[in-house]
Length: 283
Image (cartoon, rainbow, N blue to C red; front, side, top):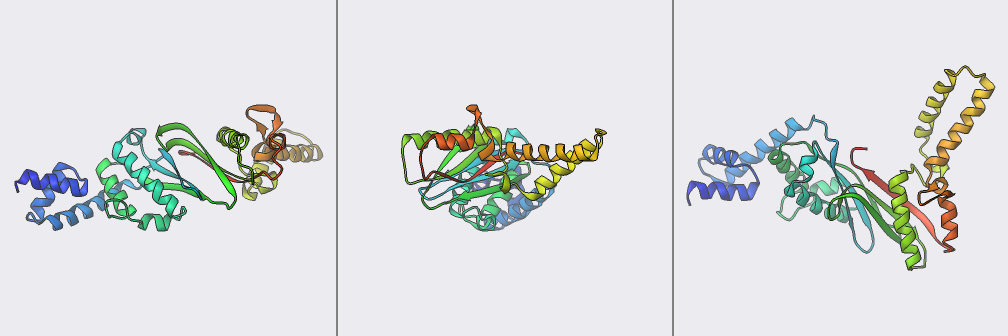
C-alpha cells in the first residue's frame, strides 16, 4: 500500500485532515492503529481548546416515532457550520438517538453511532475536523399515553433541522382533520408567542419574582405614591402572567380571542393540551 493510500485510509477511518493523518503515520512509524490513537488524542486536545468559545448558532432537530417526539438543540460558533454536510449528517443521526434515549443526555453521549463510536467520541472528532466549538444543548422528549404530538419547524435548514422548533401534545379520544388543523395551528402559535407555561399559575416563581423586581424598580422611579404603585404593580404582574401563559394568550390567528376560547370553539369535549416545548437556537 502506497503512502497516499495509507493516508486516504486513515482519513476515511478518522475524518482527520490530510496533514494530520500524514503526521500521525510518521509519528507511529506507519502503525495504523497507533496512528488512530494519536489522532484521537490530538483531536481531544484541539477540541478542548475550542470549548471556551461562544457557540450561539446551530440547529434544532426533531425526531418522532409512534409513541413519542423528541427535540434537541446543537450549537456551534458560526452559521457557516450549519451548512456543512458532515455536521448535518451528525445532527440528524444524533436526533434519532436522542429520541431513543428519551432525551437523557448522559445516555445519549454514551450511545453508539453508525460508525461504532460513541456520540462523545464522534463529537470530539467533528470539533477537531471542523475547527469550531460544537455542543449539545437543550433537549426534551414528549410522550403521553392517549395523546398525539404535533410539531412545527420554522426556518428549516434541511429536513428535520431548523432554527426554531415546537412540539405540542394534545390528548383526546377523537382523531380527525379538525384536531390535526388545531394541532398544527397551535404549534405555530407557540412558535410565534413563546409562552412560558400552560397557565398563569404554572409560570416559574423565579421568573415572576424577577419581573416583580423590575416592575418595582420602574414604579419607584416614577414618583407615584406607595398605594398607587402597589395597585399598578399588581396589575402589571397579572398582565405579564396573562401574556405569557398559553391558555390566556391572544390567539395569533384571531387576536380578539384567547387560546382557551379557541379550544372551546373546536368543540371536542375531552381535548386537553397536555404539554409543549419550544426551542429557538441561541435564545
